Structure formats: structure tokens, C-alpha cells
Amino acid sequence: MQAVKKHQCPEAMLFDLDGTLFQTETLLLPAYDAAFDEMRAEGSYTGDTPPAERILGSLGMLLEHIWARVLPEASSEVRQRADELLLKHQTLLLEQGLGTLYPGVRETLEELHRRGVKLFVASNGLEMYVREVIGKLGLGPLFTDLYSAGEYATRSKVDLVRLLLDKHGVAAAWMVGDRSSDVEAGVKNGLPVVGCKYAEFGKPGELDGSTMIITSFPEILDWVE
Image (cartoon, rainbow, N blue to C red; front, side, top):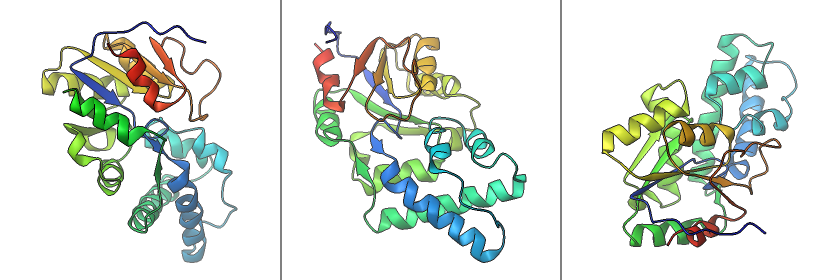
């Protein structure tokens, strides 16, 4: 078992969304199937639905890289349409009450907020998706701000995190996430990294370089003085 060395409570914590706070597959997979069903119905796509493992394994990437992996032979128009319909069906399913946080996320965020920690989302997703998920799940009041690559057109999470830190004048923060892009974003911005090892979307070694590893979200409190 990993020894826990307490760290001083930071001014802020920056959270990835998918695979960190949000059990993405609970919303993504039904929306993914619905999007390809609609594409076939309208004639914009005629093949089988690509394996779900392709999109699950791409979480954390920028959208253009996700669709290049999911639909490697498709045109940019087909990829764009798939992206539009996926967001459409995710929004519809959120309205219907689908989508689940990981166990203990809400309670842990509430405790961090109570302690005065500024909470942010830093995601490579679309602005509307990030805001819809946080809003529909009732987490909005806990967060100081939500940052997404879709809103700020950043080319990497390193750039997104740097922008966030600069805009809010944050001097001491932790980066919390489940993918190598989160580790890189933290390390290259001089932040301690909490690697989340419970989503199972990542590859072996995905969290190498993390300062701390947690296997359930509430464990983050164990590391704070």
C-alpha cells in the first residue's frame, strides 16, 4: 500500500472531468450508439459503429485526435458530423438524467470547498459538454471556473492549465486527473499531480510522474494536511 505523506492544502485544485469526476461511459456509450444510428439513418455514414474501445481509449485527447482515432478512414465532414451528433445526444441524455459521478466525488468536492480550496475544471472537451455535465449534476456552485480546450482553443492541456493559472493568479495548485495529459499538464506547470487510478481508461504507465496516486476519489483528502 502506498505510504501517504501529507501535503499542505493548496490554494486551488484543478480537475480533469472525464474519468476523474465523471463516469464518462455512463453517458458517452449510449450517446455514441445513438449518434451513429442517426448518421446511418440520415445517410451521412454507412458503416458499422466503430468499437467503443476506440473512443474510451481516446478520452483525454483533443477532439480532433479522438475522431482521427475513432474514424481513421473518414472524411473531415463525417468526423465533424459525428462530433455534432455525439454532443447532441449527450445533452439529450443528460436532460433525461443519465450520467453518474464517481463515488464520493460530490461529498469530497464539498469538503474541499468548505476548506476554502478554489476548485476548477480543466478539460480537453467542448465548452458546452463541460458546462452541461457540471451544471446538470449540480456541481456548478462548488467551482470557481470551468476551463475547456473547446472554449479557449488551446493545443494541449499544458497550455490550458497555464492559461487558467495566469488568469486567476493561482500560485499553488494541484492537478488531478487520470491520463498522461493531466500528468504532463501538472509537471510542466510545476504543480503536484494527483493521479486517479480508478477509471481504467488508461494504459500501463499512464500515471507515471504523478506525485500521488489515488484509487478512489475521496482518498484525495488523505493527502491534505
